[in-house]
Image 1 (cartoon, rainbow, N blue to C red):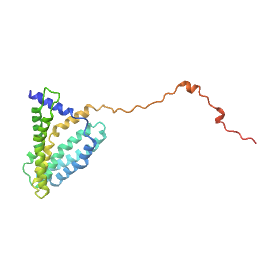
Image 2: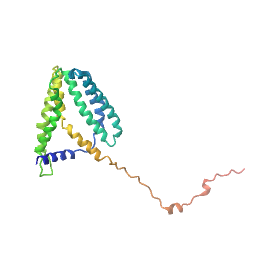
Image 3: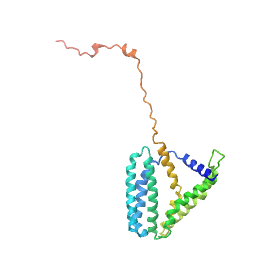
Image 4: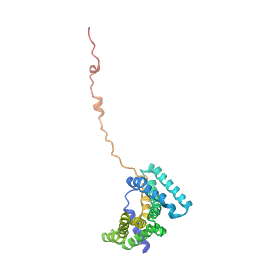
Length: 241
């Protein structure tokens, strides 16, 4: 019964996927969000990690992921590689932004917990949605159940995150780390849900957009054969002296 509910939950989430990661999302990740997280890590990552080899390895990984996403833009029409590249940016960018803002806040504690918050959120989402699934109805998740998910699963970390970020902005920099970590937790379901987008793009890789047919004007052969041409019309008139 539990496995059936989890399967139904995944089917419901997959049914809501309508296409690969959109162009604005891909470009936003490549040129705005990912560079911000990478630069934050580049500035303070070594201070938090205290491991030069690990720090350099993550720097190289970030550069490789960014370059790969530029190359993956060549597959924008199908969206398979761009969706996969976006997922790579999400995973590595999460590490960079948590460590980077942890360094900014001066709080180097609980880094492992902060990095694990999206995974914890994913488990919570799957568990709660599986309990709310209606196996005997075509409406898998009712509107009431959706409100429960929104109010008790997604809203709390988002609200606390906004409070922490506000406190950090007005001068309490300690809250930067927790604010960004809880904000990342809010989108924790993307830890697994992005795979539904990648699978969708792969399954529809051969889809071709229908083009409007070109209308041809048919002309009867009789009209062409019976057409009388005035030969003298195209002759140049000779000038008589």
